[in-house]
Image (cartoon, rainbow, N blue to C red; front, side, top):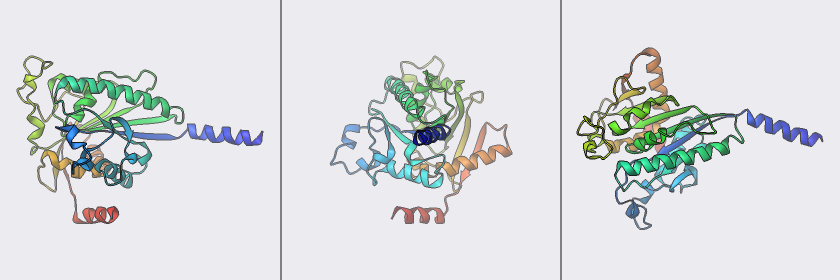
Amino acid sequence: MRFLHIILFCFAIKQLEAVDITVWVHGTYPALKVLRAKWCPVKPMVYVEDGLSLAKKLPKNYYFYKLAESLHELEPRLYNLNHIYTYGWHSSNVSPKQRIKEGKNLYKAIEKLLAKYQEKYRDIKLRIVGFSHGGNVILNMISHLPFKKNCVPVEVVLMGTPVQESTRHLINSPYIKKAYSFYSQGDWIQRIDIQRFHCNCPNGSPFLSSRVFRDTDKVQQICLTINGKKIGHTKYRSILKYLPDMMLQVEQKLCQNPLSQMLHFDYKITQQKNSKKKRENK
């Protein structure tokens, strides 16, 4: 009987634990089948399982495993390796219809995941990070909120996401607790998707995609430079590992200027930081 009480006590304690879940949504990969082929030399740079899966289950030399490991090393409480997931989607079809479909699939996958977490945890927080058009998959997912059985605070982080009128307004959902959008003036790829050619593009929309949301949108916009320089679209892949530190510094700056909706943020990557990462990866 005493043993049973101990088990029940341990279970009750576990129910009180808090957990932060991170879901990472990649951008567009052209010729995805080729990139995923065994013989393709860049497969480790792009591969994730279809749907929602733990990043730590990937081979250790794969980019998304290394990314999850780096996030965990910088901030293990908020980015625990046991709770970092990737969402693999069929991005070769560069169309808004595909992103709408994937947004619905992402919603269903997260809802199922949250149901499992609620069996063990009482306090659950969800962070969804999207790079490039992965951010538009997230915005399409937001259109399905709230999660029917799992009311959790949702934080959204967009990195270099093409802002398009068909999905822009979705960032204002009342079910999003916080939203951040990083962009750079040197990122021309973010803008080249011609939204006026999309079948779901509202009348009067700009011809190209935009870098920024409207001033009235409920999102913290961050104009990013690295060591004083604008960055291109592909540069994000090498700096995403610093996201916990970047978010900490952004929040510190926002505390100093809480009314600012457009923050100019220069992140310093020192030789010391790079040397430390190289030693850790050996």
